[in-house]
Structures are given as structure tokens and as C-alpha cells.
Image 1 (cartoon, protein in one colour):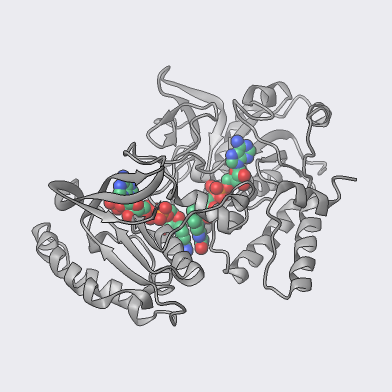
Image 2 (cartoon, rainbow, N blue to C red):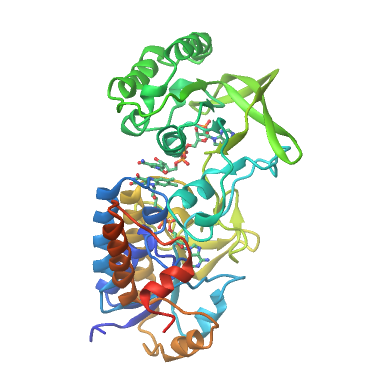
Length: 444
Ligand SMILES: Cc1cc2nc3c(=O)[nH]c(=O)nc-3n(C[C@H](O)[C@H](O)[C@H](O)COP(=O)(O)OP(=O)(O)OC[C@H]3O[C@@H](n4cnc5c(N)ncnc54)[C@H](O)[C@@H]3O)c2cc1C
Ligand SMILES: NC(=O)c1ccc[n+]([C@@H]2O[C@H](COP(=O)([O-])OP(=O)(O)OC[C@H]3O[C@@H](n4cnc5c(N)ncnc54)[C@H](OP(=O)(O)O)[C@@H]3O)[C@@H](O)[C@H]2O)c1
């Protein structure tokens, strides 16, 4: 431990926001306990980013390894914090932590309350990306993706799911429904280019012609919207399957129907665009169609975990509307909106502050800025009465499970690398916590 340490801080969640946030805190005089639900740190950088982006993921893992080696950051993986977790927020307070920074991501599922959401074949993107990125327990859950699939939403997560269906599963057809039009595409060119070669161009032209008067009705730049999509087509990766991909713009999901518990069709309402606060909004026209499909993946963003134990509004944890320690004009402070009171010692960063927003770089910046707000609060509060974490270690020793420590991370990465080399594959990941713990040597 650095002799300059004077504060004791808990960070909940070791995704990019938590890892880089913990580093900022530790560099600036805090002793940090970093708690993580998963065995491995990294969050969506490990378990969200597309599985074959090896260079990007290995680069991030190297940075995470360095942070895990920081003398003032103690990692406690395979340990959940929260109202239903291994440790509650009050437990952390009782154990002497002066501040808790919550960087647990957006772990809740944004169901729309449609009929048929419980049917086999209906999935949310998070579960699917966790599955193909080998996060327990999703890694071993069977995803029933059929030959004819649908996707809802037109952001980058849609691109990842389409890529998986087209390049990995090589299914027959994928139809992507967007409640608004082509000008509202939120993906980046490179992500679309990963599967754009499979787009049925005749269907696209017909679809674009359908949308043109709707787009003109809200003064959108029709040519610019088309040019953006065509840029992706022009830089498309070579196809590896015959999968037919098509868009259905201005089409909003209304429900799903099934047979014997299995998805059979999705009900879609045609929409038009109306202006709203300088943007557009989809408005239903009442025209309904049924499209036969055998699976659908909702790629519409996530919300925070409502069972965590903090007040939530919409899809997010409530934030102090008049922050005491704003950074770049933003509030990082948890808030009880019913009592209209700031929760003094709890700060939020990353996707726990703003759900499903931005890339790893943005989460890194947000974690760092959240820590800056925490440090301002600590400066007012003064040093911790004690930096001793023996009480925490005693609590953890009493848990009926192995809690993963800093040095275990590299052991696990090395064990997985060794299996990958022996199998002659680019990457190997264990599918269960038990296998990961065995590789670490935790069973001995
Ligand atoms: C499918 C997908 C693909 C993406 N691809 C890219 C990409 O290619 N490039 C890019 O730059 N960005 C990409 N992103 C965005 C990037 O992954 C996110 O911006 C970033 O991971 C968010 O970081 P975070 O730390 O806020 O949350 P997360 O990464 O979600 O991390 C949250 C962490 O908190 C832990 N946790 C959760 N609940 C608890 C709890 N109760 N107690 C303790 N720990 C808990 C989790 O185990 C996890 O480790 C992608 C996102 C998704 C969804
Ligand atoms: N490779 C990468 O770099 C990569 C990969 C994946 C994710 N990410 C990042 O992760 C973040 C999250 O991505 P995302 O794709 O989940 O979110 P996103 O970019 O916000 O896209 C969400 C999509 O869902 C639609 N949607 C939302 N609510 C809906 C509803 N009720 N009914 C129908 N459609 C609905 C949205 O339509 P409206 O526009 O009409 O709301 C939008 O098309 C983004 O910042 C993204 O860039 C990056």
C-alpha cells in the first residue's frame, strides 16, 4: 500500500468505468476495493465486444492487467454487491468505506411489455452477446436461433447480432425492424460493413423508396441518409454465407405469437415520422402485418438493475439534479428522488450513470470523471479513520465461495491461452465459473 493513501473507497463493478475509475482513485490517494460480479474483470469489454475482435480485446486485457497490479487496488471478483448480493451497500458502509462508486453497468433487461416476450426464440441482445462471449451462466444456455430471424433496433448492437447470425450461424434470412427511418441509423460504418454484403439490394431500394416521402415530410436529408448506408455497402467485408439480410424501416414491434411455447410470428405496426423537439418520433399508422419468424433478438439498449438497491427513474439510477461536485456539467451523484435528497456517499459512473451509452473510451472517461467527483467529496470529508481492510477480509473469508483476487486474473488468462494454443485456435474461454476457478487453482 502506498504511504500516501488516506481514503478508503469501494468501487462496485470492474468493467472499463470501474477499472479506470479505480486507477484514478488509487493514483490520487485512495485505497480501493474493487468488487466484481464476474470472475474476470472487463465487463462488456470482455463479454460484449464482438468475440473475434481479438486485437482490441487483447489490448484492453493488457491495460486491465496493469490496473489489477496497482498496489492500492484490491480486486474481489465472483462477488456481487447489492440488496440481493453477497455484500449490501450498508455492509460496505459498516466495513469503513467512505464512498461507494457504482460502476455496475446496465444489467437490467428493457422488456417492452409485449405479448409473447416469454416465448422460446425471443431474446434480448445482452443475453446473446454474453452467450457467444462465454460469460457464465449464459455461455452454457442454448440460444434457439432459427433459420428465419428478426432483429429489432438499428444501433451497433444490431450490427453485432446480425454479424453473428450471418457470419457465424449462417442462417437463411435476417429481417431488421426499425421503428424510425434510415436517417435514424445509429450504427458506425465499419460495424455495418461486417455484414453489408449480405443485404438484398433490391429489397433495400424498395424500402428506401417507401421511406423517402416520410423522410421528406420531416425535412430529412434523404441523399445523405442513403449515402451513409451505401458507404457501409461499398466497404463491405467479403460474404461467407448466403444469408439474406433486409431492413424494414418505419416498422414497430407490437407483439409475438407462438405455438407450443415457441415463437411463430411477430406483429409489426407500420409507422410514420413526426417532428419532436428538433428530432423525430415514430407514430403508428394502424397498419398491422404479421411476419413469420422463428427467433427475434431485441437490440434496443438496456437499463440498470432495479434490484440493486438504489432509486431508479426510467432506465437509470436517479442522479442528483443539482450536483455538489459536477464534472463537465454532469452529475455523478446518486439521489433519492422521492425524498428529494442526495445519497451522500454513493456516486455513479459508466453505464450505471447513463445506460447503454457510448464506447469503451467513453466509459473510461466517465469512470475517471466519476472518480474526480468522488475525490472532491473526499477532500471535504477528510481522511478515513482507518485504512485497515481486515474486517472486509474476515467477511469475505466467511462467504461460502471462492473470491477471486488480483493475481488470479493473469493466471486465468495464461490458462486460457495455453488451451487456445493446444487447440490451435485464436482464443479459448472457459464456459463456467467452476472451470475458471479450477484453472486459477482455487479448488486446491
Ligand atoms: C454488444 C456490445 C458490443 C460492444 N462493442 C464495443 C466495441 O466493439 N468497441 C467499443 O469501444 N465499445 C463497445 N461496446 C461498449 C462498451 O462495452 C461499453 O461502453 C463499456 O463496457 C461500458 O462500461 P461499464 O464499465 O460502464 O459497464 P460494463 O462493461 O457493463 O461493466 C459492468 C461490470 O459490473 C459488474 N457488476 C454488475 N453488477 C454487479 C454487482 N451487483 N456487483 C458487483 N459487480 C457487478 C459486471 O460483472 C461488469 O464487470 C459494446 C457494448 C455492447 C453491449
Ligand atoms: N462495435 C462497436 O463499436 C459497438 C458495438 C455494440 C455497441 N456499441 C455501443 O454501445 C452503445 C449501445 O448500443 P445499442 O445498439 O444497444 O444502442 P443504440 O445505438 O441506442 O440503438 C438502439 C436501437 O434500438 C431502438 N429502440 C430503442 N427503444 C426501442 C423501442 N422501444 N422499440 C423499438 N426500437 C427501439 C432505437 O431506435 P430509436 O433511435 O428510434 O430510439 C435504436 O435503433 C452504443 O453507444 C453503441 O455504439 C458499440
